[in-house]
Image 1 (tube, one colour):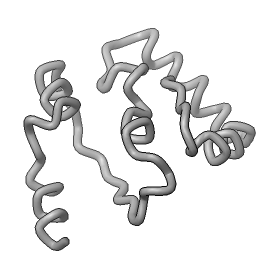
Image 2 (cartoon, helix red, strand yellow):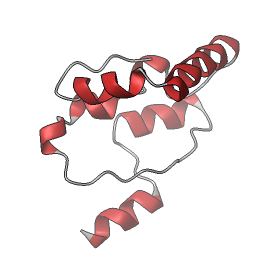
Image 3 (cartoon, one colour):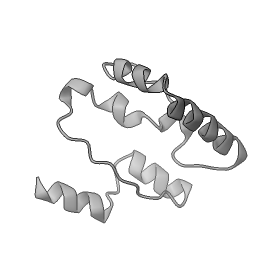
Image 4 (cartoon, one colour):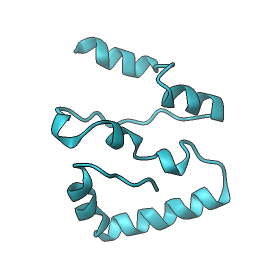
Length: 92
């Protein structure tokens, strides 16, 4: 998994010491080793790299499936916004 190298570190460190996180990390490593998964594992935490903790006001959790590499790249490069996300941002 990607490495977080900013003011998120204390929060990730605390979670990474918990058993569920250790199990999740092993499961994800196995899944990435056995098939193609999106986003690439070095980009899993890219949102945290792009947004310092001190600047976060709200976190919206959700899942939009990446069906193929093309879609994964579009989302990563912010050239395509899912309908659900555009509805959420319209509220703000």
